[in-house]
Image (cartoon, rainbow, N blue to C red; front, side, top):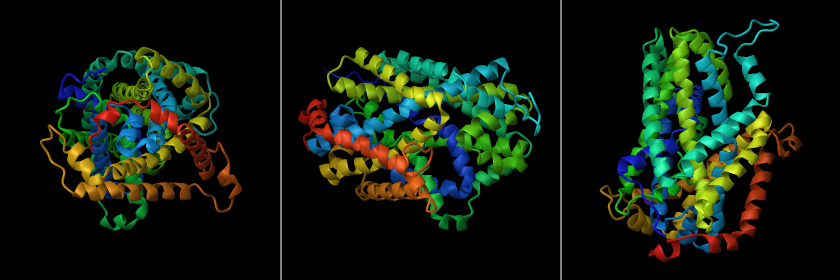
Length: 495
């Protein structure tokens, strides 16, 4: 059966941008940028946009457009049947993230409701105060209650309503969500830079300390952030590229997506850091060091509570978070659905199966924040392995052959030169380095036994054990996976 295609380039790019722009742009980027030198981090971040994100985005566009199937079919076609398990790993990691990402969207829905009704507290309790409910107490009470299960279910339902309608449903959602999201982020950024004292935030974000670039951690954090907030290597771009028109310009689309996504991150950084430096400059280190959840759900209400007209802007902030989470969740469910439809399952049935699995397997993260943090750690690092596998797929196919035949395909106005051959091989190096770095951070030399337990929020053992289980299962299923991989695939690969 012929795949449907996006109705226009604009519709496709809006859908792609919706896939890429998520909560990582709005809550993780400002925190990581602030914690790693501000302007110095931006330099490294832009470098890895060109050395990690754009090369992998190009690869995903080209592979999806060529194979017209999800990651399993694409890896089978382009690397060979023995590598079907690598494509399955790519799909599995994004699906595992989807299981707890629905919980995140649920949190944003709860806080949007609270912002609209004025029930989110904005003033911290005095130390020792009894009966007081401040932002910290409100957050603790929420995640310790049954409500995250309900909001998790609502989030799943909202995404399924879109995905079950196919590419046209994804298009319609993107046409509404992404322009709305961009308007909200721009409005919040403009409000932030007009606050008295906001110039200090701008100076911090855009003035590099060149000496800090000698710190390897800044580069490694910049690489990690690129992997997280562009969607490169997730397999999501590949899932949407299936619906590209035959003569679509792959190269231009890849650069537009990479730079468009990172522009949203920059606006989010301006919005958050200018607000912090203007409202609570003395607490800047405490705020940005609070973690994603602490920054967003504990400190942001306090910041808006001190800002003139803050109640309105708090509504806009959480509305932007809802839209960002929703558009990314749609892409994750579409990828998982695609894997099942590639295996011959009816699309409607596949969507409902993924929805049921998403709700059921997301319940532990909705009920226990410790499980959420564990899964975020394990599969967040797992994304780095995706980059390695994409690089291996391309090298197996032939790097120059992949570039000349698939990246520089029919309809490409911009041609990619041999520099890409070098960079895509370096992606494998970056992936190994970043995985090794993160795992090393998770080893406690004073408690080696404690570093190798299964369900810790942050240790090396939980990553290695869960990865080993998943990889062993996928290797065992490799022959079946290759046999059931769809494709326009095998016959479409002419070299």
